[in-house]
Each structure stands twice: as structure tokens, then as C-alpha cells.
Image (tube, rainbow over all chains, first blue to last red; front, side, top):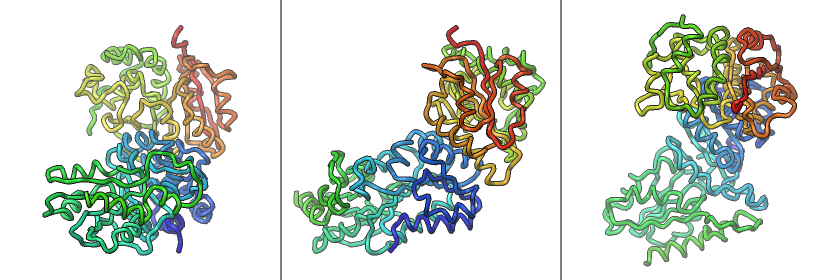
Amino acid sequence: MDTMRDRFISTTTRLLDEDPRLALVLAEISRDGFDQAARRHPDRVINVGIREQLLVGVGGGLALTGMRPLMHTFASFLVERPFEQVKLDLGHQGVGGVLVSAGGSYDWPAGGFTHMAPGDVALMDTLDGWTVHVPGHPDEAEALLRAAAAGEDRVYVRLSVQSNAAAMQVGGGFTPVRAGRGPVVVAVGPMLDGVLAATEGTDAAVLYAATVRPFDGAALRAATAGRRTADVVLVEPYLEGTSTAAANDALADVPHRVLGLGVPRRELRRYGTTAEHLAAHGLDPRGLRRRIEAFAGR
Amino acid sequence: MTTTQTGSAAGFRDVGRLMALMTGDEKHGPAATSTLDALWVLYDRVLRVSPHTADSPGRDRFLLSKGHGPMAYYAVLAAKGFVPEGWLPGFGSYDSPLGHHPDRTLVPGVEIGSGSLGHGLPLAVGTALGLRAQGLTGPRVWVLIGDAELDEGSNHEALAYAGPEGLESLHTLVIDNSSATPGWPGGIASRFAAAGWSADTVDGRDHEALYRAFTAPHPGRPRAVVARVEPKNA
């Protein structure tokens, strides 16, 4: 199976052939994968070198001329390092563009904290008008990338090597995956398989979210309708609590409790594997089950 | 938004009268007058853009990166009919589209919103690349930055990329009023020249010298013109 990043490369390579409006901006990362596309479209595959402020600024400039820019590097260097460029060169200019990140929260734990970006979605959430996709499977990534490339708006697509075994239908709001009368667990992107394993044999309901902004409050309200208290658990593969306020807002006029699970702020200062980091943060099935049961049994 | 032609014949002297209609940003007064002559020569004799072509794909682009002290810019835009003269007295007020930093979504003829330093040159590089990718080889792209704005690292990412890339349609105008700390030993032009740009330094108050520097050929290379004016704190 290819990774989401592999799929990004193959899909974008095809889209560049099909859509003359599309341009890809790189800052060295994934450069080799786009060799063929760069030879075919030398004016629309632009590698600016290791210059991430320029990466986003060039994307904004391309958009000002009517093109549709896709900007790509690791999440830490795409969202965190040039954050003011994201805010001003796209949003404040009133133009659109697609940011496509790789690396996620800890796709390469041996690389250490400099290459981890658990805060990316929370940062994007401070800005207006961004759609945020967190696909859980390469097929989902492809569908969301195709839709984003064809649009006019501002879209952040967060790719990861973490992946579920099977793809879900994506493109709309939250999708019911499992019915239940217990807490409603919202599994975001690659957290779905872990959430399904953690809630196996319990009466928890599970919703799946591959798009977290806009936040599908209507689906959350529907899933919790008719309960005396709406108990909601958010399981996000990035900073814990990133969507807690959005869930609270959606349920503002009904009694509710929200537990936000995700990556803690505290630096772990460990290398190792993604599986070890998931376990350390209590985001593996065992940790999730323990915390969801403790919350539901309160 | 529609614009009204308010007298494209208004001459350079009239720009001073138009600037005086704006009050409330005296702190940035020196920053505003430092750009005045260069802006006038550009809009009067160099840029191929008018209120009627302000949205045309083939227009020349002028990006004011140094967004502070925009009075001279607004005055020139008014003199050339991009914005009504009647907008100027409201400068900076709640109902005015003219802020102490320009917003492209509010002002006809303004290509970028600016104010935070170091954004215009990277945006200009992207604009030049976008025009090239669409086969639009006619339009030229101009960006105005300040000598202190050049401190921002984002400019150096852009100028180091644009030189080797040979972005001939790209032009950077640096207004140098010696306001940078600690300054640029060896001169600002040398930074551009070392990155492969065609670069020249001229008297920023001499209209003929500015015109010659703005229109000098620079085949295969981007162009930088450093316009020196009286020091900010002199």
C-alpha cells in the first residue's frame, strides 16, 4: 500500500497534466517524487529551495495571478515556521490555496521534536476561512486533494503515515460508523481504527471525521440527540483539545460533557516509533479504552 | 468596485496638495515622502496600468511592500484616477477604505495588502512566476521595499531565488533613507548583484535618473533599483 504522501505525489502529478491552472510549490521536501512532473511542467512545478517563507509567499503571488497553488512540505515547516505568511499572503490578500503537509504529529519519531507538529491544526484554527482535512487513508487523501485542487478556497490537507486499514467515504461532514447509546466518540482521520478497537464490545457510538474544519456540529447534535446528557469524546491525532471548543459550541444549548483526547503539549523527548508514541500518549486502543471508560463511568 | 477618473493630468505638484488632504499619520510622514518621487515616475512614465486596466491580466503590477506611510501612494493613485480624491480626507478613519497600511480588497489599483514588512518581494516573485506560467510575458512586476525592510529574512529568501531563476519581469525598487540598523555595509545594490540581479543605485529625488534606471534593459535577470533619499533622521 502506498502512503498518503505517495498518493499526493501521484495524484498531483496527474492533476498538473489535467489542469493548467494548477501550480505546485515545493521547498525541497518530496522534490524527487515530482521529477517527472517538473520535467513536463517546468513553469508550474516550482522548487524554491529550503525557503519556507518564500514557499508560502510564492503561493500567494501565484494565486494573485489567478492560479491555484498547492504548497507542500513537512507540517512543522509549512504551518508553524511561516505562519504569518499563511495568515497574510493567503488570508489577508483574500486569495485561495492548498497547503499539503506531511509528517503529522510524529510520523518520524526518530527525527525528534523539530519534525513534529502536533499544534498545526490548532494554529490553522486561529484563521478565518480555512477548510482542514485530516484523511485517514490514502484513498481519502486522494479524494480530498482532488476536490481541494478544483476549488477556489483555502484548504489545509494534513497527510500522515498513520492510516486506517480501510478507506471511508469522505467529502462531507462527520459520518456515523457505529451506533450506541453510550458516549459519542468522534474519531479524526487515522485515529479511527484505534477508536474502533478501543470501543469494541462497549455501547459507545462512533463518528468519523476526515474534515475537522468546518466542524460538523450538526452531526454531533444529531448523534447525541435525545440523551439526558450529551457525552462526547474527541480523539484527534494532533494537539489534545483542538476541537473541544467547537464541540462545546455545537452543544451550547444542551447539557453536555466533552473529553478532548490527543497529543499533549508536554515534550516527550523520546525517539522510537509512532506506535510507541501513540502508547505513551494514551492514544493506542488500550489507553483510549481506559480513558473513555473512566469518562463514561463518571 | 468602480472608480472615477479624477484628473489623470494632475501633475507632480498636485500630488503634494493631495497628500496634504491626509492627516493622522504624521509619525510615518518621512516614510511617506521618501517614496514620493519614485512612485510618481513609476506611475507617470513607466507602469502600464490605468484605472481601466486595473484588473486586466496583462497589466503591469506594482506591489507596495513597505506599507507604512502610504500617503504618497494614495496621492499618486488619486492623481492617476484609481481612487477618488474625495477619499483622501477620511484617511485612517473607520469608514475609509484608506488605512495607514493599504488593503488590496478595499482600494482599486492596490495589488497587495501590506504593513507587516517582508511580504511584498516573495509575493512579487510568485506573481512573476504565475504570469510566466500562463504565458503572459508582457506584464512587468514591480515591488517597493525600504532599506530597513530589507532586514527581514524573507526578502533574502526571495532575492536569492529570483536571481538564479532569471526572473526578468521582476523589479525591486528599494527606497534607501538610511533607516536600517545596523545598515548595509558595501551597499544594498551589492546584495542583489551578488544574487545575479541587475542592480543600480540612483538619486531618489532625480526624476530623470530614476526613469533611466527604471527603464534600463536587463536581459535574463531581475532588476533592482536603489533610490537614495535624505536620511530619515537627518
